[in-house]
Image (cartoon, rainbow, N blue to C red; front, side):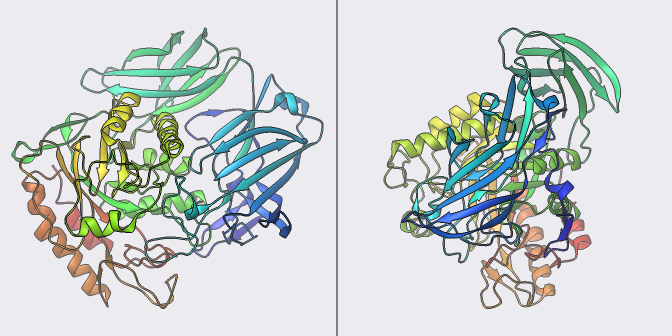
Length: 575
């Protein structure tokens, strides 16, 4: 493969799919296993239903993968890849990385079973040094129940309709290798206290006793050199340059010793709750009130499902949001490719990161009851919320632990959203405290939409069919309208389904849509902002399959409103 063009007109090349997959922690050891793999699908009787080749990292269902099939709940996908490594790549450890596989994965190398992983939204890694030969055969065996199971799956469904989308099964993230010495950096996190001009390096190392030299750079000029031999190191950053969406400045650093050498970056910024208009609690960025004016983003593409078709596709979506005047993206019940967070950090946009939903989906509980005003049920009733299995609840907790831990390094992420609209919600008070213990530096939207348990930093509501209203005066938390809008305009020949349209208020022309959008912000959002509203998230960035309520069509070719007009309205809603 040299290059190809997607339906959105974006070129996908071999250099793009084989790009180094971890831009916030880079070391000079990388061997990509992306590209053509052999694949076969076994039916429930374990007979071969179909076989051929697939382009990894694109899923079985995707057009870009080239295989274009659907993995059914009782079927099995078997991927096979042969590879050889040079002698220079061989070290004490050779780590095999899987960035994303949905859902249950069994890994075999040279005929030996070496690992089992469950979870479609958590990366995993395996030390394969002891299994390697001159020529190696890697086998990846995958099953995925999609919406026939209780696992975390977001909006994936076997039969897409409305706000439910086609599935993404099998390998849908990069597969790669790195060679390491026994003493190496597993991960890092950097937090800041802007008021006190301090930065805290949190280092996770493979051995208990270690020593590194840290060099921090500002615009490629070294400004700090410090020896590190503790997991937590405090650094004074006098006259530090704060990070914000308007000025997304990042410091870079190098951390090295005789065994390891990595580079990374960090943003000098902190997040808190403080007074806004009329003394109401709002988010503060670097000690100043900051209004969250964001978009819901599902993170789907027509040709590749949950996998971005290219790095440029990610950048274009982020830049589109900024072009219209938004300063935040709510990544909706999906964990994104590493480069999404990287570009949010460098281009400057806040991220509200949802945890993917799972458990049983009870339509009457999650949809009918809230529409009738029943939104206060206790979430310790596990069966009612679709979480009757203890193992399913524990898997969700493990997913939260893993993703909060690995994504903390990104300054763009400012809020963790644990549950959305009651789906799979359980023990949210305990889980809010759990997430706060993992990351005390960010805010938490405990229950976005309904079934609020009075936990977290926000009174978080969804409001689609009625006029936006003021906050509950008895609630001392920040008032956050975390979903609203959903205005729909279906444009012929740029729709996933020319016969179906899904949205919450439908319009026939771009002028009608634009006027209604402007009226919504002028007459409803602005007055609430002036009375103390902390933020809003408009649904949504782009159309997704049958949903036609995006600012832009699913193929990313048509912007439905004039960006300059919208920008002029949104730019007035700030402190």
